[in-house]
Image 1 (cartoon, rainbow over the protein chains, first blue to last red):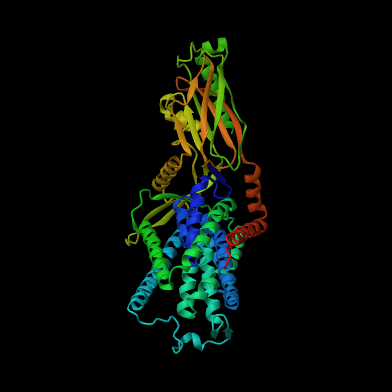
Image 2 (cartoon, helix red, strand yellow):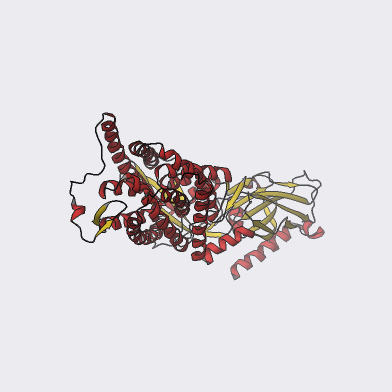
Length: 308
Length: 270
């Protein structure tokens, strides 16, 4: 069964995209990430124009993260105050990002930047998480007590002004680092079509030293709003949001996300991080391979700036 | 303009003089039409076929198989600007990235040719060039010099042009059907052109050419509209004319889908 996508301007098989949405939704619920870091490259592999993949990816992130955020909120896993501080930065970052997409397309560099950003970010974060979670995992199996929070330890983060008390996270820290993290992730959301969970979660754990339990819920909370804002901006600036494609991915995604959230509760934090790290590295390797392997066809059509 | 019309007139006079037989029974002309003057792209659009049929007036062909006449049907999409990019091994680092980009100011988005036999056999290169029939002859206008999208020289221009045609053929947007036109009787012929699901939206120009012994006898031209209709059109127009509303609606749809799922799947104990 086929449906014609109004913005991507192509006829696609409904079930392929429902299935893709469901798989991404499952991962989203399992790891508390938007799943966009997998969705965007997969959409591009399936032949969706990269800029539409990014724009539509952000719309899909809204659906999967709302679904996940509600589930997390019910379990009191959301630090709303922290989320709002991050969101403030996120909106600024997203605005800069959407404008960057427009300029990069005009310069004909968008696809290169997308590939390089994915390879770089997925590679660095995947590797860091893999190393960290492996060592935690080993220590845990050896019977050594592990705590991700080290209260006695001070870092540059503690020296910054605008300190705020975040009750739910049991933290008293400056508002600058969360806002900066939010801004950076908002930028990435706009350029890469992702929620940014795979950046924001490690950043919250390692930089802000929040506990893993509130990290997933809080990141989902702010991702909902940043992704919503980014979707609207992409619609206006780049006309790259395909509502039919988004609807297909969402229908699959919201169902998958529920099963993912339930499955996630049965796994330990370090196991989750290890799995996520593995997944991130696989996507990274695939993208890197495409970037370095000699292509069969050196030529491709590019977008004419201004026109779609 | 004056030169061209003078030339045409001269050609006409010469051909009339050269063919006394034609003047006796009337000059052969082609009349044709398209099965559907408008094609609607709706949500369930998976490509379609258009039928082009026509007749040779004053046909002197004894039967459908006689092969006295050759007919070429060319269906051309809208002329659009198109960029073509080439990857190269960037700085020898093993990174394959787009390093060169050429813009064609005018490029047919779709091009299908059906003919009674391969077009190279029907007429010589000069004739095909003049009529702009065939991929090798179609108008691809590189953008003017002075921009970074202008080709560096004739060699680069032709390299990118060939690549552009190859890419279009790969996407099945440039197609040829060498035996795509069939005579049904002494004068009646038909051809079907299939429009793939990825056919670019925009008016199509259908041209029918009648040849005999390598000479063009008559031409016919008609337009086929290819437009979005129904929900497809509504969504596309919304996205382009009311982007803020379109964006907000998409977000609300997404949020509703997410919330609906969250509450549907709510279990006791949560």
